[in-house]
Length: 457
Ligand code: GDP
Ligand code: MG
Image (tube, rainbow, N blue to C red):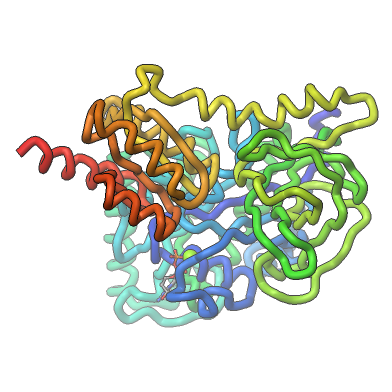
């Protein structure tokens, strides 16, 4: 297919950033609903996706620009707890996320997970916009609900404007220290080279029209090729979960191509490839998020880009973060099965060949990969002898305990964003296997380093 800018699919957008910067709130604000307040402690527990039709984006940025021309059908926004779904949105080694919003709290500047997100974005070569959020917290801020940011800024006192400028300079300086040029978008003369910053408030909506317009308009210009629709199915499993009446289902992002009820599919499983048939294709109602309970729409077929729930048999052991493959009439099933296992095998092959090293456990293949990449960096350099996905079970402890006789410090499980089963914990205590848990990658490193320190004493 030609990349002529005519047949474009919706860009897929991830929201990243440090905890509490307002990722969920920002999504709520652009969606006009309130998921965040319904969450336990406001923490994003699950992965969701929201589809924004082009008309919606157009309506909401009308005040900024009367005649917005949008060539994309809409925007698919993935809500992410930390950088989880970003690392998950991958396919044969490359990222599936087309654009990202990196949220920074204007009162806090760059924080550890901001930098972690930045590194991931760079690793995957993903373009992004910075949302400099919580501008309403500047002392003396005069609320201008849902106004474009320049208009809102004109309504502020000189003190507020000065404070804003001071903090903006601080943040751009911090980005500079990370090797990145950034500029508030209305002053940015080098779009494409210099990264746009959009000041926002997820509470009162200032700057949201600007953010939506930038997302919808800027993306196709720089990414026509990437966004040109292709009918080769490109699909990634985001989450595996049970749904009453359907058994185990998978939430997927279909980037390109069409899925039909009755299609034979192959997904990557813990115990090898899973071959099954699509029984049901579900989407939430427009503007509703996948994880919000409520009526779903049933489909006979669906075209990308969309986020979809698939019900089929035998999905219990499917692994989040891997590709979904359709077996076409001319395809050799064995070849498709091999393709489905490729991602997993390439990650699995990255363990230390000497057989000495820690055991690493993560929630998804994507996060496992990110963790392994981190552990391999020269400054960290921790060898890994075994890996697993999902909660820590007894068998993982048994595996890790094999190191007790070789190198005691490696009889350790680094568990990233997963639970530890009670029996596993008990067995670990009994055997003397250390388990460290964290939801920020480098915290695992800090804990492990401190532990090695105590062993040496
Ligand atoms: P996340 O961890 O990045 O998803 O952050 P949340 O969306 O859960 O927000 C964390 C806290 O910051 C919540 O109490 C929000 O109400 C608050 N918050 C988020 N955005 C804004 C904002 O723009 N202004 C103000 N004043 N508070 C915000
Ligand atoms: Mg959140």
